[in-house]
Length: 203
Image (cartoon, rainbow, N blue to C red; front, side, top):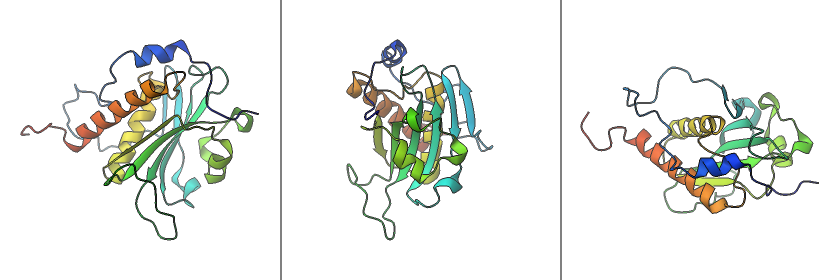
């Protein structure tokens, strides 16, 4: 029975973490705002695919704002699927108060490996029960930040796309602090760009 998300690391993980993680928005894009056209709910990259979970499948959990199923066999020899989730840290009716790492944070991004004994996991049918049954612990990545719901969804989509392109790794291997620091850097640098695309300069 698989119990935790601890296992042998793929060499690709060390290559990914050896570089400074970039802002996840192309800097050569003349537009300083997020594109307004609809973004794809399924992305294929060199290292796998990622598909957005339909909102109606987790409508019973108002704190679950967004979820993506990542299928990426390059990162671990035993499991090849992950869930990248976005959680609201707002106070919600009939819900215990959320844990906030510091005052003012509004959202939490999490990455869990998914138990292959319950898979393969399909985004179209992945719901709150699936999440409770399938996630492997401990959590691979957890990061809290402050922004609007729409900005948080944009950020999670960028992180999911970065995983299939090899820019971020969903695994933490034998150096969890190092990989989580890489996620933290990418998340906050990208979020700073979303919040202030001109970085304090005039338009």
